[in-house]
Length: 151
Image 1 (cartoon, one colour):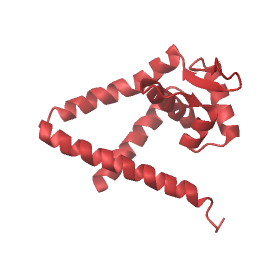
Image 2 (tube, helix red, strand yellow):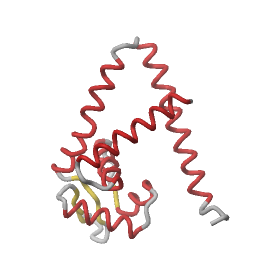
Image 3 (cartoon, rainbow, N blue to C red):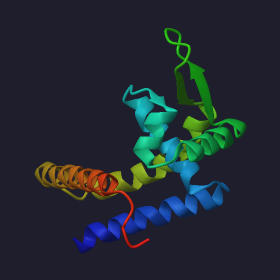
């Protein structure tokens, strides 16, 4: 478990260094990453679903979407069938920025994975998948709890 905590801490530091280097808000980068991954998997994103996924209020979603739209990394696209619905998409510049984040991480991960057999990688993959599911379940549990009563 300590190694998982170390991995998460280092990933947070990488993200912090990246956003500092690009003079961004952490929420802006989290939003771009979420949209980038959703786009890759063919999952459309609305402002409401973005807020739900990232735990943001509607006001915070509006602020981050406005900032990213002004920066040219995100665009709002009106649904052709239901004009009331607006989809959020990364622009080419937004995808390029997300790729600048992921490409070096992916390259370093590939170097590490080259040190393991396919069987070992299967075990690691099962562990990481199960851990990600456990973390998602815990996040949902915490979200359902609401605010702590001692505030």
